[in-house]
Amino acid sequence: MSNLPAARARLTEVVNQLWALHQEVQVIHGMMLRQSPTRRAPVRQRLTRVQALAIRRYARKHPKASMQAIAEAVGISNMGRVSEVLSGKRFPARSK
Image (cartoon, rainbow, N blue to C red; front, side, top):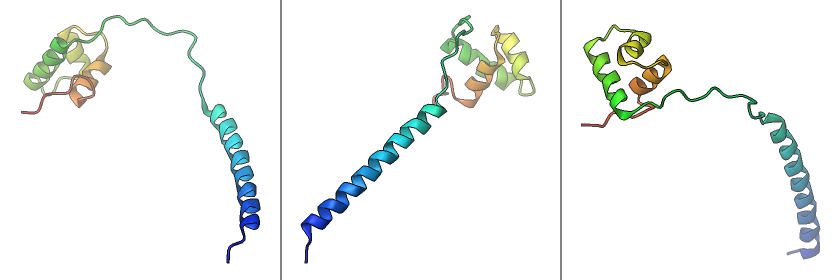
């Protein structure tokens, strides 16, 4: 048999508990957010698709070349971009 008043009262209790948990989660979430950096390094040069192709081509011809050597050969100052291109994170190679 149903007991609507009791169900309504219990539901109100649960909603209040959920609201308290929601507020707690909001506080914890705020503790996890990082502040924006006050200073950022300027972007020197954007990597182009042509440079990405040159990186792949050079890496194929020189399989033992380091990321730094590839970057220098292609004229890029950041070997991290070379790593991103070769791993497919930037300008993924088209599947054949």
